Amino acid sequence: MRSRPPHTARITGVADTAIGSLPGSTAMGLHAQAANAALADAGLTAGDLDGVLCGYSMTMPHLMLSSVFCEYFGISPRFTAAVQVGGATACIMLAQAAALVESGACRHVLCVTGDNRLTGMSRDGAVAALASVGHPEFEQPYGMSVPAAYALVASAYMDRFGITRDELSAFAVAARAHAARHPKASKTDPLTLAEVSQSRVIASPLRLLDCCLISDGAAALIVSAADAARDTRNAVRLLGSGQAHTHEHILAAPSLTDFGCATSSALAFAQAGVTTADIDLAEIYDSFTITLLIELESIGFFTRGEAGKAALSGAISPGGRLPVNTHGGLMSYGHSGAAGGAFHIVEAVHQLRNEAADRQVPDAGLAFVHGDGGILSAHCSLVLGKD
Amino acid sequence: MPLPIPQSNADSRPYWEAAQTGRLLIQSCTQCGQIQAVPRGLCGHCHGDALEWQESSRKGSIVAVSTVHRAPNADFRDAAPYVLALVELAEGSRLMLNVIGKGRMEAAIGDAVEIVFEPRGDTAFKMPQAKRRLADADL
Image 1: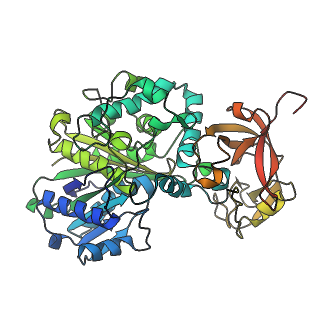
Image 2: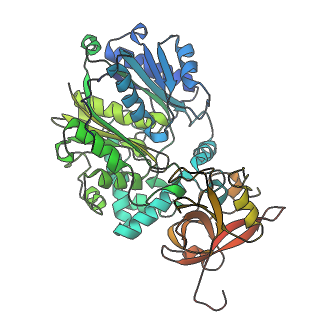
Image 3: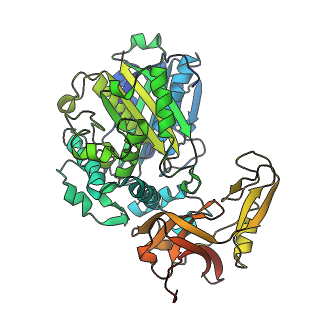
């Protein structure tokens, strides 16, 4: 593997808005709220920003979303672009912002993303819009939804590795246990294995409680050059990053059981000079229970066929060997499109800054973050550490 | 709501036109021999543009399967529950299809299937679909 120079970028500000049902919110209004909160978190002002990266919005689809945001927010940066890589968007924005500050092109880059996809469109509308990741001729005319595509992957994975129903359910239960400790989480009622396993079938083998939420919300991150970060309040280091892009359509995936997260995480670990054993907590894209199970195994936190058993034994729950998604993740904290993946980064930074209150992982020094877009199509892994 | 009819383009037109005459075509590369399920203007393996069409045996097996209860949109609401599968053809390429016909609700990974053509909509547009090859003589 080609060795890459170490990252020097700092994450200097993070924030997310309220998450859930936010009647009266707008996509741009949520973006702006998150941006202001991240600036305040960093101790910077809008005038300090010279780069802006946006994601995408389903309620406000646009050819030039980052230009729309900059106009709305009232800034004229030296660099702006929108990034659209599904659930990998937030991690890829962060990696791209790091490249901008490390090249000298920018000093402080705002990465901001959000959507009012719960109240700004119907739930049916959101489900239908998401299904457009399916191939227009070779997948969508067969009735593929995003849950159905992940269900196909789940069927292949369960067939090959003998994963049980309770092993899948354990990921939803662990997420809920974490969410119960976060004051902003959408779903905090205790959840049992039986409730997950008996929830209604969406696309077999996946049931309702195997699936992520649909939420309004936004998140913003500020990435700064190492010297520019000296002026900020409490920086966190980006130590490693890596991406892998193997397909868009599940029809064209090279394998139904091996995915790009293995490559993206290996790149990130190598650049950071650490291994899975060094990681104190992981914030991993969990659009469905099966997504998290496969990623935990492919990344190497657990051996093949063992992540479900580990989850059942409490290994990823609060106080476990590897706390995963300590905010509750996409299944219990909330999921606002590209912002969903950003919530994982916000939480990792809060943990590394020892600001996670009741859910603080003791001595959290190294965090692993992963985003996955499409149907396990686009992967971006990050290793973050204390400055 | 009527089920959607695929809108072909210059890359895919021969595939859909052949389906209307009961033939399943697979695109292959004359330079490297690679086959590809989704038709393109070039080979996704060697990136050459010398492609040809071969006729599939229409035999394959299920490599992933789900019964969809929650339809993605209004078009499919009346059809649910329906069976969605990834089928690996004997030639090696993979298609997403519905499993239709006898025993469809019991379709499982490893099942042998045959590709059939199901008419859809007012124009009876023929959609390639998968039918299980059961041992029963009355299939």
